[in-house]
Length: 80
Image (tube, rainbow, N blue to C red; front, side, top):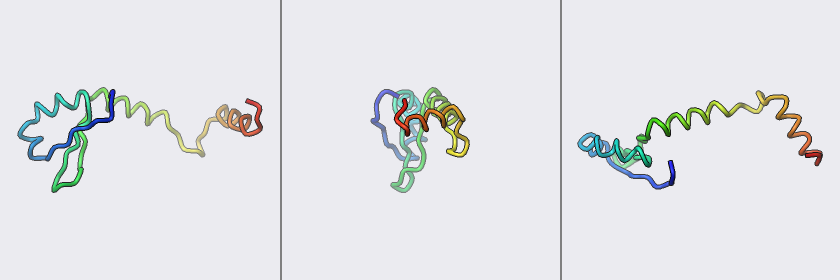
């Protein structure tokens, strides 16, 4: 998504105007509130897939690939 702006709507308004907010979510997140508190976010499938792909690129420190560790150690020694 190109910018950080977001639209905020209530759950009831989302139900009444779903087609509208579905279109809005193609370009920016739609935060859905319930009882005045943010509860869900409606995003496009493209944005969802981008975020899922990004999640798959992350790993735990204990699972750091050896070639990354070698690079990190070289940087720490100032040999980059």
